[in-house]
Structure formats: structure tokens, C-alpha cells
Amino acid sequence: MDQANASETGWRGSREGWLEAGYRALIDSGIDAVKILPLAKRLNLSRTSFYWFFEDREALLAALLEGWEQRTTGPLIESAASYAESRAEAMLNVLTCFLAADSFDSKLEFAVRSWALQDENVAARVRTADEARLAALSRMLVKWGISDAEADIRARTIYLVQIGYISMQAEEDIETRLMRIPLYVKIYADQEPQPREMARFNARFRGTKA
Image (tube, rainbow, N blue to C red; front, side, top):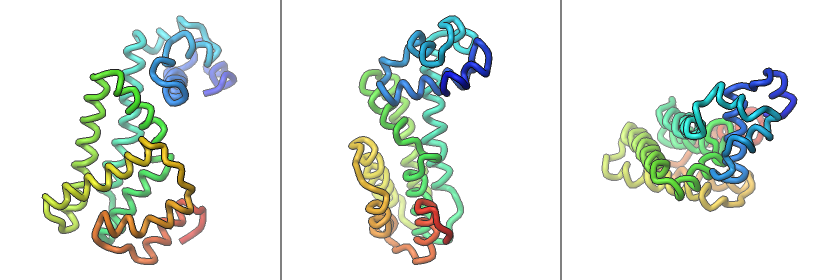
């Protein structure tokens, strides 16, 4: 939220405004930058206005973690359970979630994982999220006829590669990433995507109609 928008909500700002400022500071500069006075300056608000919405800094940090789960874990679990006509398309649904900024916030994911290196409580939340995400991927694969043991290994392969992209901050243009998707799907799901499935997938990221 910029200063003009903050001003429009009144001298106290809004809970959403403080949260967004917190996310921005966390992503841009790390957890040590998420402090009340710097956020107030970012929003052009008084420090005391913060306390209309949060009891203290710890309450803001707790809200940031809840929002992180909503912007990452929630969409991924939903994508793994979403409708698909084939195992390959189910895998494409998951990859769409990871690639689309409006469904999986990779910058926030990176910031929270960095935060977890400094805070064991946050690290525990990250481990819980990892377990929930892996379980969702395993369920998806089992649904499509893969044994429990194999689904567990495939889920880990899928997840660790995708989180690796985020953790390494891999620089890969979208065309290169899309070119690799069919083979990723074959490796992950043991099934090649059909041309029509790839057309629908590519249309999401190239801005064309399938």
C-alpha cells in the first residue's frame, strides 16, 4: 500500500495496510526490518496507529505467518485436489500453482524460509507446512493409481525441486521453464501430457487462448 492509499483510509490506516507493509519489508529486507516505527514511516502514519490493529509486534508477525500459509500452502493443497482429466493434467495443475505469482507467492516463501533460519518457532511452522504440502501431493498421486510408497518419493521429488527453484532464486526465463515442463511432468507423474493439456497450460503464461 502506498502513502496515498494509506492516507485515504484515515489517520489510523488499516489492518491490511499494516500487513502489506509488513510483507513488503519482510520480502525486501528480511525479518529484522519488520518493526513498527519503520513500517509507520513507510505508510506515513503515526506509530501509535499500529496499536489499533495489533497488540504488539509479535501479533503482526503471527498475522504475517498466517498470511504466508494462505498465500502458499492453501493454494498448493487446492491445486493438488483440483479436477483433472489425467495424471499429467493433475501435475500441470500443481505446476501452474507454483509458477503463477497470484497463486503461490514465491518471494514470500523465500522470505519466510530465511526467517525460519533465525527462529525455531517459525522453522516449526515451515516444517508443518512442508508436511501438509507433501501429503497433498502424495494424495494426488495415489488417487491416480500410484502406490503409497512410490507416491511419497514422487511427491518429494516434485516438491523439493520446486522449492529448490525458490530457495536458489534460480534465474530462468518463462520460455525456458515452459519448454521443460513436459519432461518435468513425465518424470514427476510417469505420464506425458497431451498436446491439448500443454496448450491450456501454456496459454495461462503466454497470454494466449488455448
